[in-house]
Length: 105
Image 1: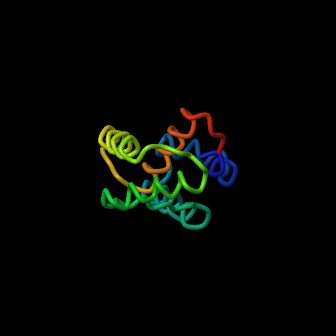
Image 2: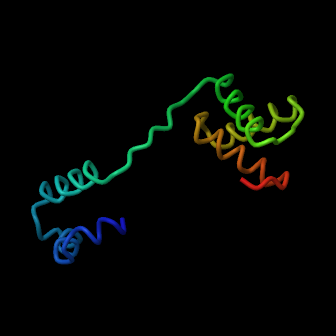
């Protein structure tokens, strides 16, 4: 990442690409940087009811009015095409829905 480029000396980055340094050291360096500066986000799967509840909550919070049957059908189609149901997918669906309805987030 760009942060990693600024933290590591250039010769280490170039050596990593050419594998001039010990591969296990390169892995340890990546892990230590990730542990110190990385942000870990978990997007855990959820049930369909939880997924729909998240979207309803976003709609209520942002004032996006939509018929329940339409919301349900579109949200289920969205998650089916993404192959997952999670909080991240719920938010992505909601931002798309809000954009189509002209609601600025």
